[in-house]
Image (cartoon, rainbow, N blue to C red; front, side, top):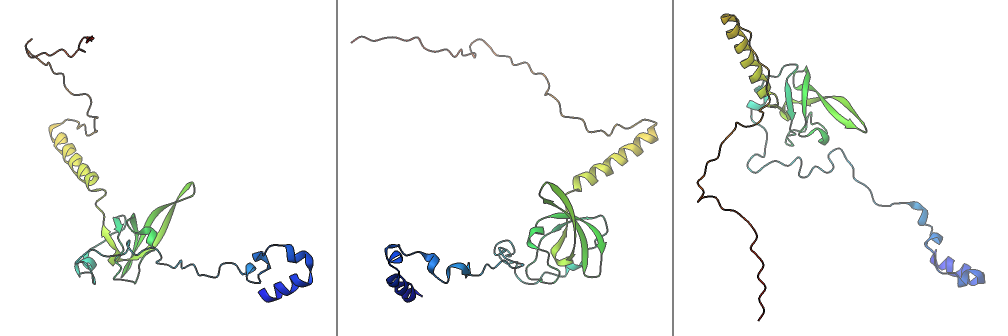
Amino acid sequence: WLKAYHQSSAQDPALADAPFSPEASPFFNMGKLHTLSRGYRSGTRNKFSKYYRTKGMPGTSRYMATFKRGDYVDIVVDSSVQSGMPFSFYHGRTGIVFNVNRNALGVEVTKCIGNRQLRKRIHVNVAHLRKSRCNESFLKRVKDNDQKKRDAKLQGLIADVKRQPEGPKDMKIVKATEDDVVVLAPLPFIENHF
């Protein structure tokens, strides 16, 4: 095509003075010629990698855990188990179990899309799930409050289980002798004429 370009410029004197332009190339309108690999596991080299001395298949205790509907679970992808693996976005997210199957759990996760939150429902293999500890303190507080209410009912009282703000600290009086007090003041300016 370059030879044809020079021949046409030789025939047409107007093209002879014009500089070379890539638009004259027949490959100009073909677009990008290299591929963009955006597969299902793209960009997960570090995210799905396993720590030192934890490589290989998971232990049997991972599969022995019992899950119920309403439980909070953390999605942590185990790259040695390819079946039932969630998409990389859900790695490290916490969701609620809405369905229990033989090998998988249905997990509901919130996802921000634009200016709204969507509840996404996915089914994930048990090897990629762990029981979440996000509501441990809440469950402990519920248990303690129930015990307080039972004890107060036996005594004929009403238990106050509301959480109160910490509030300001107690008053303190700082005592010191006059010798311990140091007054910080700027030194007087002395101008030296030599």
